[in-house]
Amino acid sequence: MSQILVKLADLNVSNNPEDLLVVYGLGSTAAVLLYDREVGIGGIAHFMLPSSASDPQRAREYPAMYADVAIPLLVESCIGKGACRESLTARLAGGSILMGQGISRSISEGNIATARQILEKLAIPLTAENTGGNHNRAVRMEISTGKSFVKRPDGSWEEMV
Amino acid sequence: MNLDSAIRNSMTRLPAFPATIHKVMGLINNPDSSLTELVDVIRLDQSITANILRMCNSAYFGLRHKVDNVHDAIMYLGRQNIVRAVMAAGTSRFFKSTPGYEAEARELWEHAVGTALLAQILARKVFRREDSSLFTAAILHDIGKIVLGEFVKDKYAEIKKLVVEQSRSFLEAEEKVLGMNHATLGGVIAAHWKFPEDIRDAIAFHHRPDRLQGKTDPMPWVVHLADQGCLMLGIGRGADGLAYDGLDGAMGKLGLTQPDFEEALAGLVKEMDNAREMIGIVHASPN
Image (cartoon, rainbow over all chains, first blue to last red; front, side, top):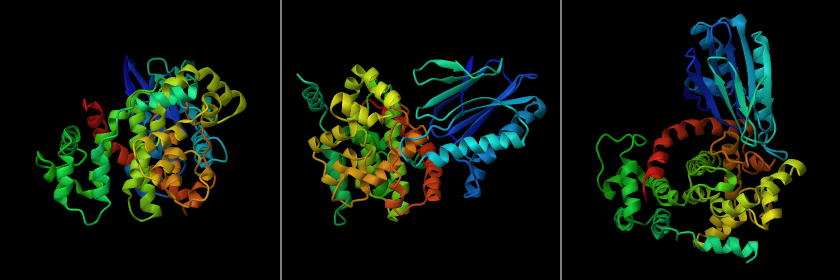
C-alpha cells in the first residue's frame, strides 16, 4: 500500500485502491475526508483557518488553507476523478484547542463549525467526527475500502464510524 | 542523587554552545562591524562554514551560481539571512530525539525553526523589523526538552495522568512531577551557555510570559505566541500536544488582532515550505 501524505493547507484525491491517504499533525487544524463507496474514490483536505474572506489573494495560492474554499474544492476534485456527489459521505477530524482562555479557540471551533456548515449546504452526510480535546491527531483513509482511522493520544488507531 | 540534581547534572553534559554564534550575533548587532570581521569569525568554525555553504547552495536561496566561500555566501545571504543560517547551522546539533515527548529529532527541529520563522513574521507586524535576538530565543525556546526528555519518559504516566484527569497543562504537570518544567530548564541552559538576560527570559517564560514580573520586554510574548501558533498548526508534534495554556492577553500585549494572528499563521505555511529544504539539509549533515 502506498502512503500519500496530505500536507497542511493541501488536499489529495485518489482512485487507486493501493493508496492510503494520511494526515499527520492535526492540531487546531482540521481534515475533511470524503469517500464514494460506489466507485472507490476518496480524498482528504487539511485546512487550518475557517474563512478565506480576510485574504482572498492567499486563498488563490493556497486554496486548501481555508475551510470555506478547501471543502468545495475537495468535492469538485472527487467528482473530477469520477465520484458522484450524491454518493459522497464525509468524516471530520481535528480542531484541538489549547488550554486556558487561549488564542486558538475561535480558530479551532471555527474550523469545525465551518466544515459542518459547508457539508450540510452541499448535502454531504457527515458520518463520523473526532474533534476537540487538546491532543494532536493523525488520520488515514484506505482508498480500497474507504475505511478511515484516527490516531488516539495513546498512539493506537481507532476506526471512524 | 535527587531528581533536581540528576536533571542539572544531565544538563552539564550538553555540548558547549558554539562560540562562533555568540561572536556572529555580537557583530550582527553592531552596526560598525565590517563584513571582513564577520567572514573571519565564521570561517574559523568548519562545521558552520560547511553548513552555510550547503544552505547557500540549496534551492531555498535559489542562487544561480555555486557559492564556495564564506565571503560570497554572506554577500548573497544578507545580514538577516546570515543570522538564520548561522543559528540553524549551529544549533541543529542539539536537537536530538526526546523520548519523553515522543518527538522525533526532525519534528523538534521543525518546531524550533517554525517558531523562529513565525516569531519573525510577528516581529515584522509588531516592531516593523526582524530581530536577531528574538530569532535566537525562538529557535532555542524548547531546548529544555532535550535534557528533560529522559526524565519525562520515566514519569510519563504520572505526568499524563495530571493532564488528563486534572486538566493541568503539560508544563504544570512537569513541574509537579519533576520539580522543574522544560521552559525553566531551558532558561538555566541558556544561562549556562552565557546568553544575555533577554534571551534567557524569553526561553524560560515562553509558556508563561505573564509571570515575568517587573519587565516590559515584549520578546517572551512573541515567542509564546509563535510557539502556540506552531502547536496549533501541528508543526512539530509530540505527546504534549496542545496541552498548554494559550494566554488570552498575548495578542493584546503586542497590539495584534485575531486577523493579524491568522494572517501570520497563513504566512508561515509558505515560509515553512521554503525552509523545509534548508531544515532537511542542516539536520541531515553530520555536524
